[in-house]
Amino acid sequence: MDTSFGRCRVTGRLGQRHADIVECMLYVAERRREISDGGIELLVDPAKLRRMLSDHQYSHGRIKKLLVDLRAATVEIVTPELELNGDRIVGGLIDHVIPSPMARRDPLTGNERHLWRVRLGIALVMLLERDLSLYYPPAPIARLQHGISQALARHVLTHRHSPAGGWHLDTLIRSVGGEAVDSMTLRNYRRRLKDDLSGLINIGIEIDAKDRVKRVTAAR
Image 1 (spheres, helix red, strand yellow):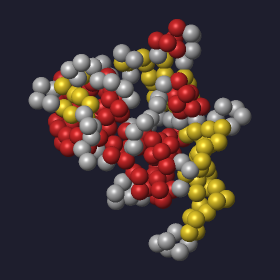
Image 2 (cartoon, one colour; image 1 turned 30 degrees about the horizontal axis):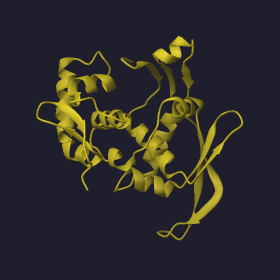
Image 3 (cartoon, helix red, strand yellow; image 1 turned 120 degrees about the vertical axis):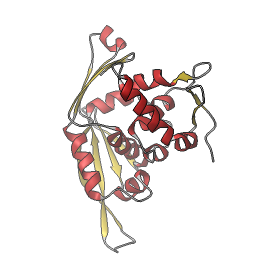
């Protein structure tokens, strides 16, 4: 995908639901440990992760499938700044998820559940260090109905300030969907965003009648 921010190539399967998993693991992680080779390992309670992802809770099987996709995918990112230095980001997002010796009692079953040790891939570590700063709770975004709504919300929330008068809706759609979005896809994306208007308002994003997108005070 080519955008005004640079180029990204994904080998594998990645989408907004995979972003839900990554953001929620980063948010609920109870411990974080830096590895000597530059990697990062998180300690994650899978029960907290499921509650963060969904009111109805993701099934263990669905979370496992998304983690398998994350483990298998390779991303390559080139931005103008990186290209100027002859550099690029290439690698995976998740290296492994393994049981931790630490366990807790499950109040529903009375059995013990093991926490997870999640090793972040070098590509994700580089993104966190160089570009991707997350200062928002991920749960409201995970509850949006459509991927385009989630992508737009993430794009807006990682910018500290809105442009004067807000963003043009179609410009934002092309920023997250690629410059080659055709007219039919654009109409479909607009319709899906209208489905998620109330959820976006709860996050602090408004799409007004003139198709301008602005950051507002989130609804309570």
